[in-house]
Each structure stands twice: as C-alpha cells, then as structure tokens.
Length: 313
Ligand code: GLN
Image (cartoon, rainbow, N blue to C red):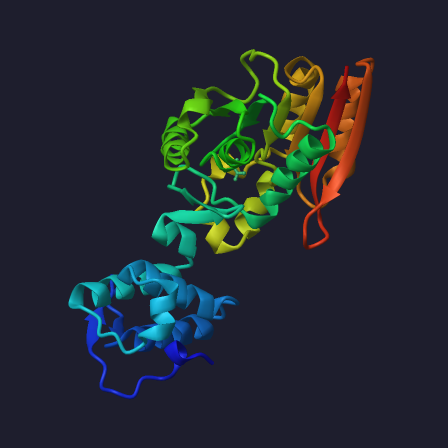
C-alpha cells in the first residue's frame, strides 16, 4: 500500500454526491481511500486505479503529487466533484467517460457519448500497420490512409502521428463523432494531414488508398443486452451493433476492398471468434485480384483481434 492510499487519520469532511450518498474526505489520500473502498465493495477489479484516476481528474493534481503530498487538503469544489465522480463510477460509468478522455497508444484522446471508448486491444491494429510499413520500408513515405468508422479518430490519428508523411481520411456515419475526431486531430497536431467525411461505411465510393483500417461494430445484436454495463449503457450502440450475426459490416465493406486498396494493406478488427468467418467473407470478394495474403493477428491477451489482408500489385 502506498502512502497516498493509507487510511485517513484526521477527521474527514463530508460532501454530497449527485444521488445523495455522502462522500467523506478531507485530504487527497482520504479521497483515494474512500473511493477505493467503495469501488472494491462494488466488486470493481480496478478499484484502486479507478479511485486514483478519478481523484487526479477531479483535483487536477499530478500522479506524482498524489504520492508526494497525500495530506493536501481538498477544497469544497474538489470534494463535490470527487463525490460526483464516485457516484458516476458506482453507476458503472467507465472512468474514461467520466473524465472525457482515454489514452490510446500513448496519446490522450477526447471521447464523447457519440464515440466508442477506444480499447487497448485495438492497438493491435496500429502494431499491424506499423509492422507492415517497417517491413516494406514505408515509414517515411507519403502513405494514404482510410479509417472507416473512425469514432474518436484513434486509429487514423495515431497512424498519422506515427507516420510523419502520411495523410488520410476518417469516415463515420455520426457527425457528432467526427467533431470529436476533428478536435483530436487538432490536439495531436495532425489536423493538416487529416480529413473527415460523414458517410455510412463504404456505401458511397471513395478514392483508392495504401492503408485501410476499420474497427467496425461487430457484436451480435442479441448479445448486446448481456454486455458489461460499462459497455452496454455507455458505448453508442451504433458503434457496437454488428447485426444479427455480428458480421454485417464485413459483408458490406468486402466488395469494395480491392478498389479501395488496389495494392496495400487492409486491417479489420474482429471479435475473438470471428477470424475464420471474416477471412471467408473477404476471400469471396477478393478472388481473382492478383495476389492476396491473409493473416489473423492476436492481441496481447492471445485472442484473435484483427484480420490483415495484403493486396500486391
Ligand atoms: N475507430 C474507433 C475505435 O477503434 C471507433 C470504432 C467504432 O465506432 N466501432 O475505437
């Protein structure tokens, strides 16, 4: 147990959260401890981390300050904010949604109710593209990238940040999501290399590109009610719902892939059990197109996470 998590010794003060529950703390360490305990009792696996992140977010102190000045006295405003965040989290809202941002591949992305909360396993797609660029000596090349269902822009914008001469287009059906992606492009300093287009997948024709990435909605519709409340109640269903069998978007995009990527790499995120089916769908639409290589890649947890398809000229 670190110093900042030590149980409080002095008499704490109370603040009232949004749902009337009483939050009691006077110092940073008391706040962390109080939140940690309540999250632990609620059965959250990351109770302690959640508590720290929310206290940091609510007070504006740094991670270092949390450890170095655990006795820092909270203002009433800070207490009220911490109490509100505690109630939101106990209502199963993810920490990233409460704070309005999420780290992805080492960068902070703004998120909103209109965007999916980017997942760490989606970083597998970034690794896949960067490995391909490295292997083919393309890291400094003016690659053209398309990201279908860009959401917060995490895939496209991370690639633009990693590949200094690349430029690209982020497509999404939601104008509100595109506004967030645009803000993120500007925060990351890649706005001049990014454009955003509001359309439904590849239903309208697009030009050709070198790299295609997409994390489409792939949850089987009937499984959505069984998802964790953090996902079911807070991620936009538009970004989750993959139709009756979860594969609707792969079927929609597959016929367009060889014209969008005549010679290059296409990477699709998939559910852990969708590898064979997605490869089959893509194969049936790429037969006859010069040479096509398929690969199913796993994430760090060892689950199938993406299908990569290389089209060669
Ligand atoms: N591209 C975003 C992500 O990977 C959003 C994907 C989506 O909305 N399905 O997180």
